[in-house]
Amino acid sequence: MLDRGWAIVATDYVGLGASPPHPYLVGRPEARSVLDAVRAARTLRPAHLAPKTVVWGHSQGGGAALWTGIVAPSYAPALTGRGRVWRKKGDDDKAMADFDKAIALDERSIESRLARADIQLARRNQDAALVDLKRVVDLKPRDLFEVLAQTAAKAKIKELERDTCRDGSGQRDARCL
Image 1: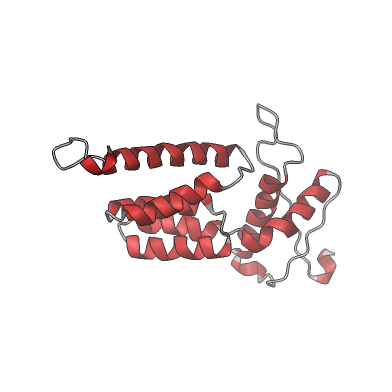
Image 2 (image 1 turned 180 degrees about the vertical axis):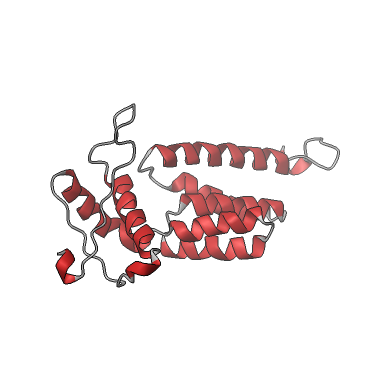
C-alpha cells in the first residue's frame, strides 16, 4: 500500500495500557481516536495527504472503523477547541461563532453548548444560557462525560432560577412566591 502512495495512520485507544482498563468496544471514544489521528496526520506538511480517507480495522479496530463512519459527520472538536482558545484570549465573539458552528454540525455538542451558555451568562443573557443548559439536560447521555455535564447543567439551571427569584437586595421577589 505504501508503494501506491497510501499513508497509514494507526491509533492506540483511549486508556490503552493504563489503569483502569481501557473501554473495549466503546464506539464513540474509539472513533474520536481514529478521527484525531487522521486530523493529526493531515497536519504533516511534507505528507501532502489527500482529503479522502479510508478507515479499516480488524477486531477492535473493525468496531472503531464502524463507529468512525457514524461519528465522523458530526465530530467537530477543532471548532470547540478553537472556541475555547478565543474565549481564553478574551474574544467572546469569535468564540461564540465557533461554538455556534460546532453546534450546527452536531446538535449534541454538549461541550460547545456549555461554553456558549457560559458566554451568554457573562453577557447577562440568562434566557439564552438557559436554552443551552436545558438542551444539555434533555439529551440522553451516551457516556460518563455527558452524565457529568448534565449534572453540572442541572445545578447551574437551579442556581439561575434561584437567583432570578431575588431582587437587588437579595430578598425573594414577589413574582416567585
